[in-house]
Image 1: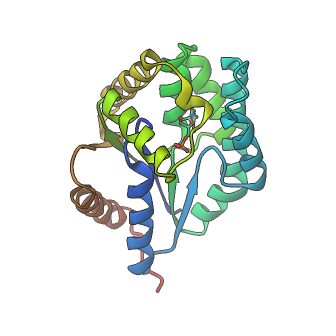
Image 2 (image 1 turned 45 degrees about the horizontal axis):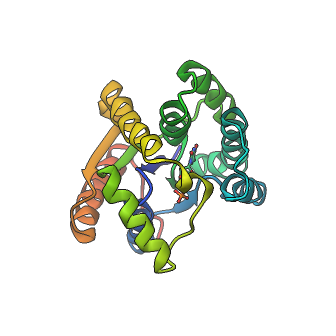
Length: 218
Ligand code: TMP
């Protein structure tokens, strides 16, 4: 079995930049590695992503939303992630089940136990070995996201249109989730420079790969 790492954080926390840098490092070092993102990561998942993120879909209900994110996840886990893990790969995933707990659970106030059951059904119980979390103040994260959108370096999706209070509940949700299971989370302050975040993530990854006996193949 390989090793499964997810990156989580509010929108604008810089997680996509970090996960791409980590992927690049691991490839250069010769590890067998796969990078995927949620929602999406498969042909079917990418079609679901289009529906989920279409800013025109303002009438989408919270329960429909959670089922769509979960359908995309089920396809990704079954079609791509499990086979990669069984082949001994390091799988890096940009967002995963903790996003559902934070955004749909805390953001939309959906029942947590129900969400856990839906997620277990979608994933067959696959949970990350480590969740890397980039923490950031809500106003700052939205400011960064707007700036990145203006510069054309990220999309503006349906979730970005949610009100400030929603984003505050999401961040507070993340903090509550990690307080319940601190050993599963590696938390970093996203206000640090990109390079300093990269260095900390690299160090933590080295330790995890050694613990999981993941070998370089190249
Ligand atoms: P991103 O690709 O820019 O991270 O955008 C994904 C958006 O989807 C982000 O706003 C978080 C949201 N999301 C959920 O609400 N629930 C989920 O389960 C996942 C995976 C993402």
